[in-house]
Image (cartoon, rainbow, N blue to C red; front, side):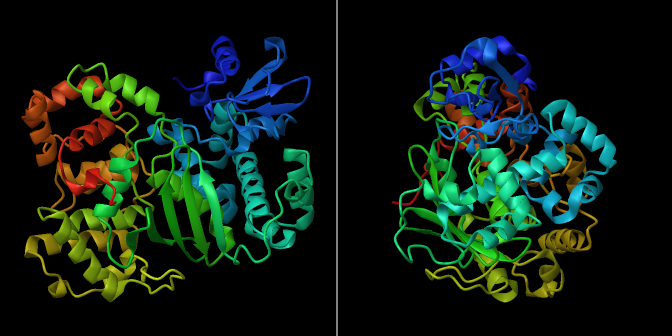
Length: 494
């Protein structure tokens, strides 16, 4: 699937007529006779092709005067896979908008982060998405408002504030314009909620994804590497603490056949869209597994692995700085030893939090906290202490930036220049923190062992040459190769 799919009318019409859910989030169908827009898989009878127009984003549909369909709720589609498989300006801008930067810092803040003028960003977003950053942020606010209206008993004034609206009037007008219902009418359509069913700040929602999704390595990896106090596996759910712009949160994520159940407790509801965005990113829920698996199946030695358990995702992170620190702690030691190192740092330098369910006690320490520690207190070889202290110091003073807006190649080069950072550490950070879908680990022991068992070349140079045919999805090939082992990362706890 290519950028600008909404311009391929014939292909879009076929997707709508077959109600193909794989295309949800890739484009949106606007019906000129009803002035309603839908996702491709909308269950209603498809309109005549001459009455359909196609748009690249929900915001573009709203800008053109279309309202969201009440049946298929297109505003809740999985996000476009494009933003997580590209590192150009538009993709980086979309990741930042999803993370709430426009609401917190405005369009000038978005431009500063990306190093471009506001005019350049406006022009490129309009060209590709049919909407500028303000309209895209407005569409996200509307979706957040709907979520709060439907999942909490909060008063509408609090919802307006939490969703990022500047006034009750703007909130009311936007909700009515986007959904053709007032906020109170949206809530009235729901089954009556039991009194006191939801505590303030506690939310339960569903995170959609494109099927298939194999949860084994995804949740297995997160559970097997969980840092005590920050993460845990409990009653079939992965739980962890979240450091967020306005406060902190605790999330529980449970895999289900058609969605991920998400339980969120937030100290400030304004963090809701950011928390959702980061959880989706950690679980790689906006991936296009069909495109990934089809490409990997072209290699006859990988095809059986894909056919056996399709839909593997890349387990990522909710905090890029945290992951980089943990990658250094995990250099040349076992998973258990890395967890022990991290747990000591959490106890000594993490911010304490209250967990209503017990079990979680801290946020992972910030780079600023870790930069102040005494290197002699670290139970690791001197060279790795230097690696650790250099990393946290550069993260703390801003000379190294790891984020969803990072330029992948530029950041790789910066990391490689640090003492103790070799290709393995850089690529595991690129894969799991920066989100590069083509990051590859040819020197990884588990990868080389899997390659040898499968009959693939096992030397790093030869394996890299063979893996050229897997591009741009080599990070997903890594997951399939790792899964040939019996390591706990491949199996969620029972």
